Image 1 (cartoon, rainbow, N blue to C red):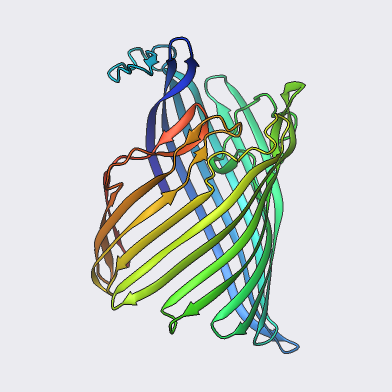
Image 2 (image 1 turned 30 degrees about the horizontal axis):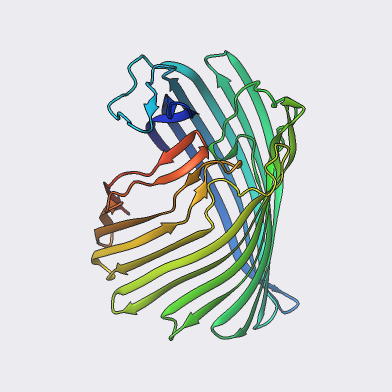
Length: 392
């Protein structure tokens, strides 16, 4: 069992008046309690048929989730902000009222099988199939309404590996996955507009080709990959009737990634990578065709250096670089690119491990994510996180 209690408190810019250079603002606060229980049982074994080697993996995954998000609104009690002479002391002064109070229960079942087939010394074939079912039941305690939706889908996966040289393997893969009703955070708004039309799952297809290589007597490993990711069956609004939801959206991302991990000398290691991607809206009923997908940067990179003996003290430091992104699919608000410097130090023994991570060392102001042009989440300021684990 895992239980997490957290909350957030944000003020959003919601409007702009050009004549006065003034923006209106809102304040929202959410109290969230979650409980997630998952059980996974796998069976793996090898056998041969007609001279071919098989590595078979089968498994069952059962999940039970509970989410209780309680959202509060500050209404109109947040003072506006003058962009020419901002008074940052102006803040929310009124009471917070409950905007929504939902309880969501999710029961999920997954069954999968995968066979890794070695054809000869150079060729391997991997094929897998997974079936998932999600039962989402959400109750609104404010509106006193309830809705239950079931989602199910089969996700296939195929991969091929060719190793013409001892230290270089070329691969190609294709897979299809789905996002259940309610998305990654699992939950729906009972009887909301559009729910009655179609709550079928949104789907994803991924194609990837690449090469994995080992260099300098296996001291450095690299992966160079090119991929295409398509998100389809996306929910969009009917332009003639906004209460109708159409499953006609399509988003496509194409990119290239290079990652590397290796041992420099002694107990010193390095890891990092660079990625380039072009992510666009291909089909949409709201005029977003050709726009960049929100919150996706064209360029990303990272580089970390680690000192890690087998036991005792260890440390790591590095940079994460993210290019500029749009906050919305209409591409009206730009989130500037940023670089973040992080570090950690720890002490490890056989049974236990204690570490302290100092994040955003330079205390840089940046924007971590956005769900719309009006809901932009700033990155955490400089912070220290201490964790400990014990294994027995």
